Amino acid sequence: MRTKIINHLLTALIITATCTSNVVLAKKNTPKTPPTSEGRKLASNYTKQLKALKRDLTASLPRVDKRRISAYTDALAAEATAKSNSEAAQKKIDAIGNRIEGQAIMERNYRTDPFSVYAYIGKTNN
Image (cartoon, rainbow, N blue to C red):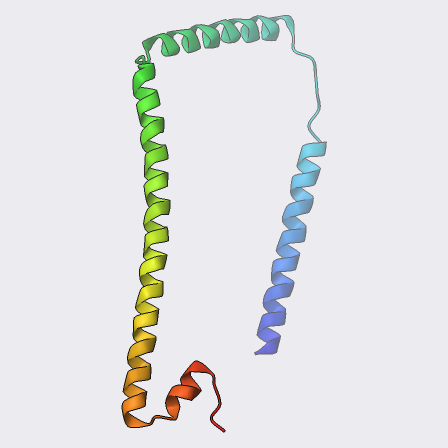
């Protein structure tokens, strides 16, 4: 069993070392040559096209009313407040339930053995 784990770890280590070295070497070997005049023209044309496309897309997006945005953020805040209030109320309900459950256990134990009540509430009977 141990030899299988060791073999798997060694295999993973070898694969990681091989992949990492290939990635590092691939990044170092990329030569940086300045673009030619045609490349600069193409880049400027593509930049202009990209700016025009962004302008057209933002113009075609629907406008959202500021009242709707504020109503949405107010609703999110109200939801968060309601959730925290609900969690606080649930904690109180759980505490009441635990108290009632403890009292029921004490009453049940008291009916069968009056000295077990002391053990439940942590007192000792001397």
